[in-house]
Image (cartoon, rainbow, N blue to C red):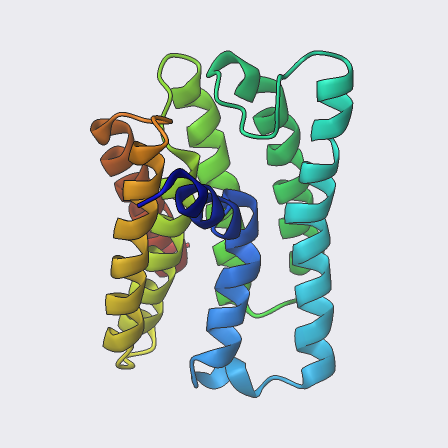
Length: 202
């Protein structure tokens, strides 16, 4: 794997894009939610994409300008604290909007689980640099596992594809020297478990 390719994978599978990617999988997986009216799907897409990606990513240039962070990668553990704190608020706000609009419970819980994942990431990051990328992709795996268990549907092919993608992303993060192996593995497991529990038991 080249450095350029590793950076491309890290960009395409950015943690902040995971809620939107998760929605895409939900609406494309032939479960009952995929038959929601298109206008309702578009509204949920817009709410989630703007609040969980556009707004959080748009604050980074300001932080760079104020010299609070060095770059978009947030490679330094301490630099992540402020962006994670603000992102956490955006995610909780997204959950409140979807709850008020009475969005499907599974989607509400997915966003709630994403919010909880960020809270845990922030707390862990105070002492140790866990992989946010792997928490994100792990959350998508947890989402599909939860859907297959809760709705009793066969999503095995999607799970296998996601596991392969997770392996590639983990390798990319290691290749870029952004994380140690344990930070990658623990991030993935944290993402899987958090979303799985939130959807199945909340």
